[in-house]
Image (cartoon, rainbow, N blue to C red):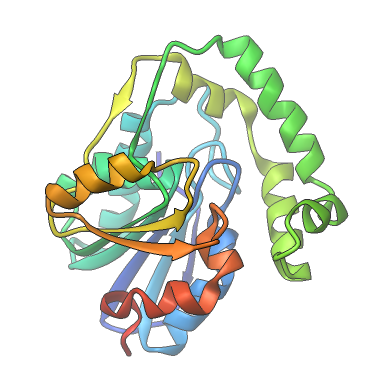
Amino acid sequence: MLLNTLESGSGERVVLLLHGLMGSAESWWRIGSLLAGRGHRVLALDLPGHGLSARDAQGTVASAADAVIATVEGLTGGAPLSAMGHSYGGTVLAAAADRLPLECTVYVDTACHFPGGADRVALAARYEADRRRRTDPTWLRTSRPFYSQTDAEVEARAAERFDPATAASISAGADVSHVPEAGSILIRARPSSYVSDAEAGRLSLRGVQVRDVPGAAHTVWYSHFDRFCALLPEVFAG
């Protein structure tokens, strides 16, 4: 599968952006604009079952990683790149990392593992209920006061295009466990519902650079945009 890509900028340095569950390539709209303005070529991908990419009712993290690799290779010809993956997108990035020519890898509020064995039908129903709520920009701004109007419109559109069956398939199979590689960066909300202090400590001992953003939301760049960018000079330098 080749994935829908929002491409911006034209610099020699390439930055790959992978969104989280129920997001889309547009979730990075403000990040992508900043990077492109600083001379980077930005590739924001819609993961399977998200945005304008194809659905995959039998999808797995491994098949999503394969799709990312095929798409990136087709667009860059194997040129070196930096990459950021948020939440589920971070797990996909970790699964693909050893097959991509990465110069800098950033994981955003993800430990890159989650249990499998979920009831596919029940989980798809829960995702569908959540999806319907999120299609309302007003509800999104009420539940997430840090969203701008554009943020809410982008995420409502992502919810409209999100496929619950694809997402449920990912959690219905075997447990998923990947470990961010030594030298990579973890941007973590603090406190985080996804990366505990103990987990962050273990990753730090493995050589992962853990950088916390106190008070941030799970979508760290939405709630704390300036701080998020300031913590990543390796990516945002012009």
